[in-house]
Length: 148
Image 1 (cartoon, one colour):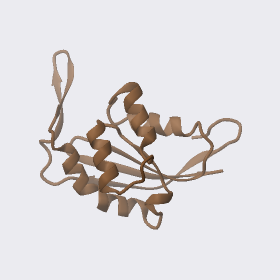
Image 2 (tube, helix red, strand yellow; image 1 turned 90 degrees about the horizontal axis):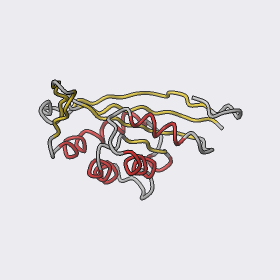
Image 3 (cartoon, helix red, strand yellow; image 1 turned 135 degrees about the vertical axis):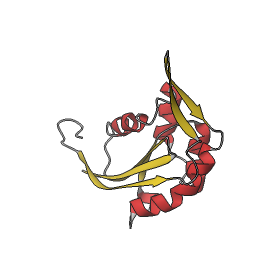
Image 4 (cartoon, one colour; image 1 turned 180 degrees about the vertical axis):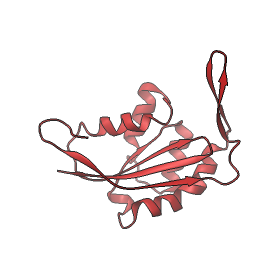
């Protein structure tokens, strides 16, 4: 994805996925006559927190967490707080995700794409790790690199 005439783009470096064991009942979309309804356990953030360190190590490889930008599906403040705590991210690391949650709420896992798009409006280069979460319970991650 470019950001206009300067031609800055993102390159996919790698992806990773984790299915959290014994968590199928933590999150589910249920088809109803009037649309889909989300069933969400209050333990989702704890379950994801257990899977994220290993997933992050796999995803980042030799890229340090402190040099990376972060786009995380803002499923709610607790999810963002737990991701930040479990991964020991610096204070403002999840600011773009928190802003997306503040402005438009939880728009499902696709919100992470809007966050990446918003981040690309600024000039920066280097790695960006993005996470989205969904039923199963699954955590999907991609590592992108933006060249200046």
